[in-house]
Image: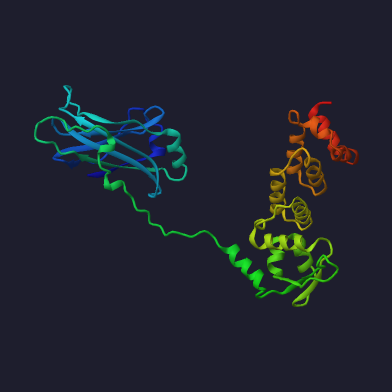
Length: 344
């Protein structure tokens, strides 16, 4: 048998600690039961199951749970107890959870809905006719109460595959309206790379200015001379997928892509490249990585590089490298930052 204990958090939060809220009385296993809740009991709301009729050696399973918005389970408790005759002063025996849910959790939920509903269930475990309590070694021995096996009203939603669709559009050149012409790296001209100006403009402020700031004819051809073809292809694929191309491990290629990301205003791409460079950084490569961070305005990477340089024994090793000395000679700001961090 199951039921509800309901109260208004805002109305009860200022009441005394011994203020109680009662559920309706229900019948289970030939006995009457109700649940008593003390919403303001110290730091926790307390919840107890009461046996409301005279009985001896009644073994009951008591479960209670609180759900947010009738869906997400916030708190669930389960207990098995043997109830006996009422005590001398006429009060009925009760057993349960003095620390059912913390007041801070109640307050957090009540910020959106002051109405609190606690669902509960009681099942009386059948005895064997001997008059002795039913032997239950642990709560795990008691079958799961079916009322708490909730089925959410939901429909599974697959992960987004928008990047896959956009990538296929890029590869197939379907509906493209702009072409990029570049050198193939061997003295000749590579086949034009076709793209969609709306996607480019939406993703990059530099492309937005170039493609929307002037009237371009349909299927316009734009010559690119400020980067190599592999870097441009990698940047284009990021624009369509929001991720680094697979197999991009060469240090020089990553630095070139970071430079392109800085020029075209692709902040996420710049940080992805910075993370890749940082993951591979060593004493020998930190001068070049730090130089790249300074040149292409990546303060996050610059800070991590300087952290590495001044950490423990690293400075003695890095300072002996020719690349680091050359970097300090042409970059006074890096020299000043290192000296400040080292307090020299």
